[in-house]
Amino acid sequence: MLKLSSELDNNIRKAGEATYPNECCGILLGEIKDDGTKIAKRTVDIDNSSENEERYHRFLITPEEMFNAEKIARAEKLEIIGFYHSHPDHPSKPSGYDKDHALPFYSYIIVSVDKGKAQILTSWELTDDREDFVQEEVV
Image 1 (cartoon, one colour):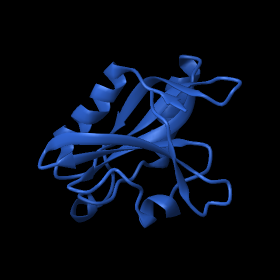
Image 2: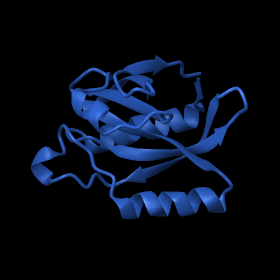
Image 3: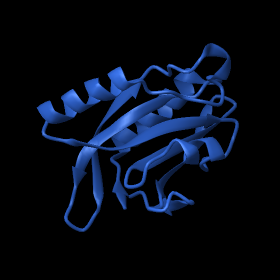
Image 4: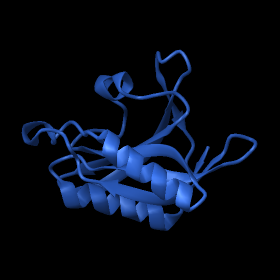
């Protein structure tokens, strides 16, 4: 389960709309409870570093951006708990590309952006065997 405040939900949706028709991307910082519940406390917007002609259906977070997010997390006594990105004019379900580049444990939020307007927001976790995503409850 992922707990996401309405403020952070709005931040992700606005990022998706602002970058349309390209994908937005960012990192979720938060904490993990003993029962495995992830509580998002902050989003870190990332400039999509994919090649210009690929940004409409791909996103890239560079190692430098990951390092900077880790520094922010440490300073705020948080952890990286996941990532988010948008799917312009496509459903908020992981693609094969998403699966190939994901790691188990993390929450992967996807917001569909239809004609510039954010729609459905979902979250997914990759199974430990990396075979499939399982939809995660967002509250």
